[in-house]
Picture 1 (cartoon, one colour):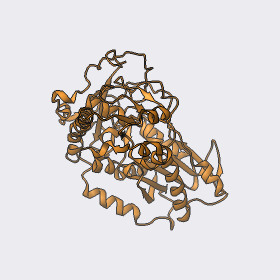
Picture 2 (cartoon, rainbow, N blue to C red):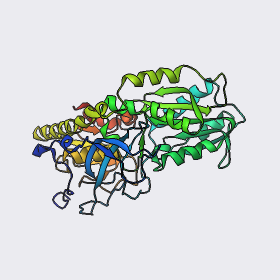
Picture 3 (cartoon, rainbow, N blue to C red):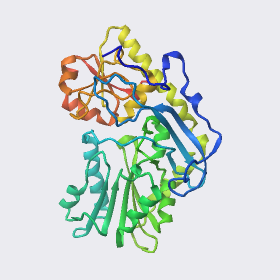
Length: 398
Protein backbone atom coordinates (compact mmCIF):
# COMPACT_ATOMS: atom_id res chain seq x y z
CA UNK A 1 0.00 0.00 0.00
CA UNK A 2 3.01 2.29 -0.40
CA UNK A 3 1.95 5.52 -2.03
CA UNK A 4 -1.53 5.57 -0.48
CA UNK A 5 -0.47 6.57 3.00
CA UNK A 6 0.08 10.22 3.83
CA UNK A 7 2.35 11.37 6.66
CA UNK A 8 0.27 13.04 9.39
CA UNK A 9 0.74 16.74 9.79
CA UNK A 10 3.32 17.50 12.45
CA UNK A 11 5.20 14.18 12.37
CA UNK A 12 8.94 14.39 12.13
CA UNK A 13 10.86 13.60 8.96
CA UNK A 14 14.49 13.13 9.84
CA UNK A 15 15.89 13.13 6.28
CA UNK A 16 14.90 16.78 5.97
CA UNK A 17 17.30 17.57 8.79
CA UNK A 18 14.61 18.24 11.37
CA UNK A 19 15.98 18.42 14.91
CA UNK A 20 13.14 17.21 17.10
CA UNK A 21 14.76 18.75 20.16
CA UNK A 22 14.07 22.18 18.71
CA UNK A 23 10.40 21.67 19.55
CA UNK A 24 11.10 21.40 23.24
CA UNK A 25 10.16 24.50 25.23
CA UNK A 26 11.98 24.35 28.55
CA UNK A 27 10.58 27.60 29.90
CA UNK A 28 8.94 27.26 33.29
CA UNK A 29 5.27 26.57 32.74
CA UNK A 30 2.09 26.38 34.75
CA UNK A 31 0.18 23.13 34.54
CA UNK A 32 -2.98 23.57 32.54
CA UNK A 33 -6.09 22.05 34.10
CA UNK A 34 -6.31 20.81 37.72
CA UNK A 35 -2.55 20.56 38.33
CA UNK A 36 -0.01 17.84 39.02
CA UNK A 37 -1.55 14.38 38.89
CA UNK A 38 -0.03 13.55 42.29
CA UNK A 39 0.21 16.67 44.45
CA UNK A 40 -1.88 19.23 42.55
CA UNK A 41 1.05 21.62 42.14
CA UNK A 42 0.92 23.90 39.15
CA UNK A 43 4.57 24.82 38.65
CA UNK A 44 6.82 22.65 36.56
CA UNK A 45 8.51 22.26 33.22
CA UNK A 46 8.08 20.36 29.99
CA UNK A 47 11.14 18.10 30.01
CA UNK A 48 10.45 15.98 26.94
CA UNK A 49 8.51 17.00 23.84
CA UNK A 50 7.85 14.47 21.07
CA UNK A 51 5.68 16.82 19.06
CA UNK A 52 2.45 15.42 17.64
CA UNK A 53 2.21 11.64 17.61
CA UNK A 54 -0.46 9.08 16.76
CA UNK A 55 -1.98 7.10 19.60
CA UNK A 56 0.37 4.15 20.03
CA UNK A 57 -2.42 1.68 20.81
CA UNK A 58 -4.48 2.54 17.71
CA UNK A 59 -3.56 0.11 14.94
CA UNK A 60 -5.55 0.94 11.78
CA UNK A 61 -6.51 -1.66 9.21
CA UNK A 62 -3.94 -2.06 6.44
CA UNK A 63 -6.37 -0.69 3.87
CA UNK A 64 -6.99 2.47 5.92
CA UNK A 65 -5.07 5.13 3.95
CA UNK A 66 -4.83 7.62 6.83
CA UNK A 67 -3.70 10.13 7.76
CA UNK A 68 -3.99 8.98 11.36
CA UNK A 69 -5.02 11.47 14.05
CA UNK A 70 -2.06 12.93 15.94
CA UNK A 71 -1.88 14.49 19.39
CA UNK A 72 0.69 16.42 21.45
CA UNK A 73 2.97 14.11 23.42
CA UNK A 74 4.90 15.80 26.23
CA UNK A 75 6.38 14.87 29.60
CA UNK A 76 5.96 17.44 32.39
CA UNK A 77 8.00 17.48 35.60
CA UNK A 78 6.29 18.80 38.73
CA UNK A 79 8.50 21.24 40.63
CA UNK A 80 6.77 20.43 43.92
CA UNK A 81 6.80 16.63 44.17
CA UNK A 82 9.13 15.68 41.33
CA UNK A 83 6.69 13.39 39.53
CA UNK A 84 7.36 13.13 35.79
CA UNK A 85 4.03 12.78 34.04
CA UNK A 86 2.11 12.94 30.79
CA UNK A 87 1.11 16.56 30.31
CA UNK A 88 -2.17 15.78 28.57
CA UNK A 89 -3.87 12.87 26.87
CA UNK A 90 -6.74 13.58 24.47
CA UNK A 91 -6.71 10.03 23.10
CA UNK A 92 -9.31 7.33 23.70
CA UNK A 93 -7.78 4.05 24.93
CA UNK A 94 -8.06 1.09 22.58
CA UNK A 95 -8.47 -2.53 23.61
CA UNK A 96 -5.06 -4.04 24.48
CA UNK A 97 -3.73 -6.07 21.54
CA UNK A 98 -0.37 -7.21 22.89
CA UNK A 99 0.85 -10.57 24.16
CA UNK A 100 2.78 -11.17 27.37
CA UNK A 101 6.47 -11.68 26.59
CA UNK A 102 8.46 -14.46 28.22
CA UNK A 103 10.82 -11.88 29.77
CA UNK A 104 7.92 -10.44 31.77
CA UNK A 105 6.82 -13.90 32.90
CA UNK A 106 10.35 -14.78 34.01
CA UNK A 107 10.77 -11.50 35.87
CA UNK A 108 7.48 -12.07 37.74
CA UNK A 109 8.68 -15.49 38.90
CA UNK A 110 12.00 -14.01 40.01
CA UNK A 111 10.27 -11.18 41.86
CA UNK A 112 7.87 -13.48 43.69
CA UNK A 113 10.74 -15.71 44.77
CA UNK A 114 12.84 -12.80 46.05
CA UNK A 115 9.98 -11.06 47.84
CA UNK A 116 8.85 -14.32 49.43
CA UNK A 117 12.38 -15.07 50.59
CA UNK A 118 12.41 -11.67 52.30
CA UNK A 119 9.29 -12.64 54.26
CA UNK A 120 6.73 -10.41 52.59
CA UNK A 121 4.52 -13.18 51.18
CA UNK A 122 3.14 -15.39 53.92
CA UNK A 123 0.99 -18.47 53.14
CA UNK A 124 -2.65 -18.06 54.08
CA UNK A 125 -2.69 -14.27 53.61
CA UNK A 126 -5.05 -12.56 51.20
CA UNK A 127 -3.69 -10.87 48.08
CA UNK A 128 -5.40 -8.34 45.79
CA UNK A 129 -3.82 -7.49 42.44
CA UNK A 130 -3.99 -4.34 40.31
CA UNK A 131 -2.42 -5.46 37.06
CA UNK A 132 -1.39 -3.74 33.89
CA UNK A 133 -4.03 -3.44 31.14
CA UNK A 134 -1.38 -4.94 28.85
CA UNK A 135 -1.81 -8.29 30.57
CA UNK A 136 0.09 -10.56 32.91
CA UNK A 137 -0.70 -11.60 36.47
CA UNK A 138 1.22 -12.74 39.53
CA UNK A 139 -1.79 -14.42 41.12
CA UNK A 140 -1.07 -17.97 39.89
CA UNK A 141 2.49 -17.71 41.24
CA UNK A 142 1.24 -16.35 44.56
CA UNK A 143 -1.45 -19.02 44.83
CA UNK A 144 1.24 -21.68 44.42
CA UNK A 145 2.89 -20.24 47.54
CA UNK A 146 -0.33 -20.50 49.54
CA UNK A 147 -1.56 -16.92 49.28
CA UNK A 148 -5.32 -16.48 48.79
CA UNK A 149 -6.30 -14.26 45.84
CA UNK A 150 -9.34 -12.03 46.46
CA UNK A 151 -11.25 -9.95 43.94
CA UNK A 152 -12.43 -7.17 46.24
CA UNK A 153 -12.36 -5.90 49.79
CA UNK A 154 -9.21 -5.47 51.86
CA UNK A 155 -6.17 -7.70 51.56
CA UNK A 156 -2.99 -8.38 53.48
CA UNK A 157 -0.98 -7.82 50.31
CA UNK A 158 -2.09 -5.33 47.67
CA UNK A 159 -0.02 -5.68 44.52
CA UNK A 160 0.27 -3.24 41.64
CA UNK A 161 2.37 -4.49 38.74
CA UNK A 162 2.82 -1.69 36.14
CA UNK A 163 -0.81 -0.70 36.67
CA UNK A 164 -0.54 2.59 38.57
CA UNK A 165 1.06 4.45 35.68
CA UNK A 166 -2.12 3.96 33.64
CA UNK A 167 -4.18 6.03 36.07
CA UNK A 168 -4.79 9.65 35.06
CA UNK A 169 -5.66 10.63 38.64
CA UNK A 170 -2.49 9.50 40.34
CA UNK A 171 -3.28 10.74 43.87
CA UNK A 172 -6.74 9.16 43.92
CA UNK A 173 -5.49 5.89 42.42
CA UNK A 174 -2.72 5.48 44.99
CA UNK A 175 -5.03 6.43 47.86
CA UNK A 176 -7.53 3.84 46.64
CA UNK A 177 -4.92 1.10 46.64
CA UNK A 178 -3.60 2.12 50.06
CA UNK A 179 -7.12 2.03 51.53
CA UNK A 180 -7.43 -1.64 50.54
CA UNK A 181 -4.40 -2.71 52.58
CA UNK A 182 -5.59 -4.51 55.71
CA UNK A 183 -4.13 -3.52 59.11
CA UNK A 184 -0.56 -4.79 59.28
CA UNK A 185 -0.55 -5.48 55.55
CA UNK A 186 1.69 -4.32 52.75
CA UNK A 187 1.50 -2.53 49.42
CA UNK A 188 3.79 -3.73 46.59
CA UNK A 189 4.30 -1.47 43.58
CA UNK A 190 6.38 -2.31 40.52
CA UNK A 191 7.39 0.39 38.04
CA UNK A 192 9.77 1.19 35.20
CA UNK A 193 12.36 3.43 36.81
CA UNK A 194 12.66 7.03 35.62
CA UNK A 195 16.38 6.78 36.40
CA UNK A 196 16.55 3.96 33.84
CA UNK A 197 14.71 6.01 31.24
CA UNK A 198 17.22 8.84 31.62
CA UNK A 199 20.30 6.61 31.85
CA UNK A 200 19.46 4.63 28.71
CA UNK A 201 17.83 7.47 26.77
CA UNK A 202 14.50 5.64 26.56
CA UNK A 203 12.59 8.67 25.28
CA UNK A 204 10.11 6.48 23.43
CA UNK A 205 8.84 5.12 26.76
CA UNK A 206 6.69 8.26 26.74
CA UNK A 207 3.29 7.43 25.30
CA UNK A 208 -0.34 8.36 25.58
CA UNK A 209 -2.10 6.36 28.27
CA UNK A 210 1.01 6.16 30.47
CA UNK A 211 0.39 9.03 32.86
CA UNK A 212 3.33 8.77 35.30
CA UNK A 213 7.05 7.97 35.15
CA UNK A 214 8.29 7.30 38.67
CA UNK A 215 11.55 8.05 40.31
CA UNK A 216 11.75 6.21 43.60
CA UNK A 217 12.10 9.61 45.25
CA UNK A 218 8.78 10.82 43.86
CA UNK A 219 6.96 7.56 44.61
CA UNK A 220 8.21 7.51 48.22
CA UNK A 221 6.79 11.02 48.66
CA UNK A 222 3.48 9.94 47.12
CA UNK A 223 3.30 7.01 49.53
CA UNK A 224 4.01 9.27 52.49
CA UNK A 225 1.08 11.45 51.44
CA UNK A 226 -1.27 8.47 51.97
CA UNK A 227 0.31 7.42 55.25
CA UNK A 228 2.67 4.73 53.96
CA UNK A 229 6.43 4.33 54.33
CA UNK A 230 8.67 2.56 51.83
CA UNK A 231 10.42 -0.34 53.61
CA UNK A 232 12.29 -2.28 50.93
CA UNK A 233 13.04 -2.31 47.19
CA UNK A 234 14.20 -4.93 44.70
CA UNK A 235 15.67 -4.10 41.31
CA UNK A 236 15.39 -6.08 38.06
CA UNK A 237 16.88 -5.89 34.57
CA UNK A 238 13.49 -5.90 32.81
CA UNK A 239 13.09 -2.89 30.46
CA UNK A 240 16.64 -1.91 31.34
CA UNK A 241 15.78 -1.39 35.00
CA UNK A 242 12.57 -1.82 36.96
CA UNK A 243 11.91 -1.49 40.68
CA UNK A 244 9.56 -3.32 43.03
CA UNK A 245 8.85 -1.33 46.19
CA UNK A 246 7.27 -2.63 49.39
CA UNK A 247 5.52 -0.22 51.75
CA UNK A 248 3.48 -0.45 54.93
CA UNK A 249 1.52 2.08 56.93
CA UNK A 250 3.85 4.53 58.63
CA UNK A 251 2.47 3.47 62.02
CA UNK A 252 3.44 -0.15 61.39
CA UNK A 253 7.02 -0.16 62.60
CA UNK A 254 8.67 -3.51 62.28
CA UNK A 255 11.69 -5.52 61.22
CA UNK A 256 10.78 -5.37 57.55
CA UNK A 257 12.50 -2.03 56.96
CA UNK A 258 16.00 -2.38 55.52
CA UNK A 259 18.63 -0.16 53.93
CA UNK A 260 17.71 -0.82 50.30
CA UNK A 261 15.34 2.15 50.05
CA UNK A 262 17.86 4.63 51.46
CA UNK A 263 20.56 3.26 49.16
CA UNK A 264 18.38 3.75 46.09
CA UNK A 265 17.33 7.23 47.19
CA UNK A 266 20.98 8.15 47.70
CA UNK A 267 21.74 6.93 44.19
CA UNK A 268 18.91 8.98 42.73
CA UNK A 269 20.17 12.07 44.56
CA UNK A 270 23.30 11.81 42.43
CA UNK A 271 21.23 11.59 39.23
CA UNK A 272 19.44 14.82 38.44
CA UNK A 273 15.79 13.70 38.37
CA UNK A 274 14.23 16.78 39.94
CA UNK A 275 15.07 19.51 37.40
CA UNK A 276 14.90 19.91 33.64
CA UNK A 277 18.70 19.84 33.42
CA UNK A 278 18.65 16.11 34.11
CA UNK A 279 16.42 15.54 31.09
CA UNK A 280 18.36 17.47 28.46
CA UNK A 281 20.21 14.44 27.13
CA UNK A 282 16.91 12.56 26.93
CA UNK A 283 15.49 15.23 24.60
CA UNK A 284 18.65 15.31 22.51
CA UNK A 285 18.54 11.54 22.06
CA UNK A 286 15.23 11.79 20.17
CA UNK A 287 16.73 13.16 16.96
CA UNK A 288 19.94 11.18 17.44
CA UNK A 289 18.18 7.81 17.74
CA UNK A 290 15.69 8.52 14.97
CA UNK A 291 18.41 9.63 12.57
CA UNK A 292 20.47 6.52 13.35
CA UNK A 293 17.56 4.20 12.56
CA UNK A 294 16.70 5.98 9.29
CA UNK A 295 20.34 6.08 8.18
CA UNK A 296 20.90 2.40 8.97
CA UNK A 297 17.78 1.33 7.09
CA UNK A 298 18.80 3.48 4.14
CA UNK A 299 22.26 1.93 4.10
CA UNK A 300 20.83 -1.58 4.24
CA UNK A 301 18.49 -0.80 1.35
CA UNK A 302 21.35 0.65 -0.71
CA UNK A 303 23.35 -2.53 -0.09
CA UNK A 304 20.45 -4.65 -1.34
CA UNK A 305 19.76 -6.20 2.07
CA UNK A 306 16.27 -7.07 3.25
CA UNK A 307 15.24 -5.78 6.69
CA UNK A 308 12.01 -6.57 8.57
CA UNK A 309 11.08 -5.25 12.00
CA UNK A 310 9.95 -7.16 15.08
CA UNK A 311 7.78 -5.85 17.92
CA UNK A 312 4.75 -3.70 17.07
CA UNK A 313 4.92 -2.02 20.46
CA UNK A 314 4.31 1.53 21.61
CA UNK A 315 8.04 2.26 21.70
CA UNK A 316 8.30 1.37 18.01
CA UNK A 317 5.50 3.77 17.07
CA UNK A 318 7.23 6.95 18.21
CA UNK A 319 10.61 5.83 16.87
CA UNK A 320 9.32 5.01 13.38
CA UNK A 321 7.32 8.24 13.20
CA UNK A 322 10.25 10.40 14.29
CA UNK A 323 12.57 8.56 11.93
CA UNK A 324 10.25 9.13 8.98
CA UNK A 325 10.27 5.40 8.15
CA UNK A 326 7.64 3.91 5.87
CA UNK A 327 7.22 0.62 4.03
CA UNK A 328 9.78 1.56 1.41
CA UNK A 329 12.51 1.23 4.04
CA UNK A 330 10.82 -1.29 6.33
CA UNK A 331 8.30 -3.51 4.50
CA UNK A 332 6.83 -5.02 7.66
CA UNK A 333 6.96 -5.35 11.44
CA UNK A 334 6.30 -8.84 12.75
CA UNK A 335 4.46 -9.37 16.02
CA UNK A 336 3.20 -12.39 17.94
CA UNK A 337 -0.13 -10.69 18.67
CA UNK A 338 -2.72 -12.01 16.23
CA UNK A 339 -4.87 -8.98 17.06
CA UNK A 340 -2.24 -6.67 15.53
CA UNK A 341 -1.50 -8.81 12.49
CA UNK A 342 -3.24 -7.58 9.36
CA UNK A 343 -3.15 -4.01 10.63
CA UNK A 344 -0.48 -1.35 10.21
CA UNK A 345 1.78 0.62 12.48
CA UNK A 346 0.20 3.89 13.66
CA UNK A 347 1.36 6.94 11.73
CA UNK A 348 2.90 4.99 8.86
CA UNK A 349 1.97 2.47 6.17
CA UNK A 350 4.16 -0.34 7.53
CA UNK A 351 2.04 -3.50 7.86
CA UNK A 352 2.09 -5.71 10.95
CA UNK A 353 2.82 -9.23 9.76
CA UNK A 354 2.74 -12.70 11.30
CA UNK A 355 5.77 -14.64 12.48
CA UNK A 356 5.31 -17.06 9.58
CA UNK A 357 5.45 -14.17 7.12
CA UNK A 358 8.65 -13.02 8.80
CA UNK A 359 10.24 -16.44 8.33
CA UNK A 360 9.12 -16.67 4.70
CA UNK A 361 10.66 -13.26 3.97
CA UNK A 362 14.14 -14.63 4.88
CA UNK A 363 15.41 -11.21 5.94
CA UNK A 364 19.10 -10.42 6.15
CA UNK A 365 18.37 -8.50 9.36
CA UNK A 366 15.47 -8.26 11.79
CA UNK A 367 15.30 -4.87 13.52
CA UNK A 368 14.19 -5.60 17.09
CA UNK A 369 12.28 -2.78 18.79
CA UNK A 370 11.97 -4.59 22.15
CA UNK A 371 15.45 -5.60 23.35
CA UNK A 372 14.05 -7.67 26.25
CA UNK A 373 12.65 -10.10 23.68
CA UNK A 374 15.97 -11.07 22.09
CA UNK A 375 16.45 -14.40 23.88
CA UNK A 376 12.79 -15.29 23.41
CA UNK A 377 12.62 -14.56 19.67
CA UNK A 378 15.92 -16.26 18.91
CA UNK A 379 14.61 -19.42 20.56
CA UNK A 380 11.17 -19.13 18.97
CA UNK A 381 12.40 -18.29 15.49
CA UNK A 382 15.64 -20.21 14.88
CA UNK A 383 14.87 -20.09 11.15
CA UNK A 384 16.05 -16.48 11.00
CA UNK A 385 19.66 -17.21 11.92
CA UNK A 386 19.60 -20.62 10.23
CA UNK A 387 18.93 -18.81 6.95
CA UNK A 388 21.83 -16.40 7.57
CA UNK A 389 19.82 -13.57 9.10
CA UNK A 390 20.69 -11.62 12.24
CA UNK A 391 18.85 -9.81 14.99
CA UNK A 392 19.67 -6.11 15.41
CA UNK A 393 18.53 -4.09 18.43
CA UNK A 394 17.17 -0.73 17.33
CA UNK A 395 18.49 0.93 20.49
CA UNK A 396 22.06 -0.07 19.66
CA UNK A 397 22.17 1.67 16.28
CA UNK A 398 23.02 5.07 17.79
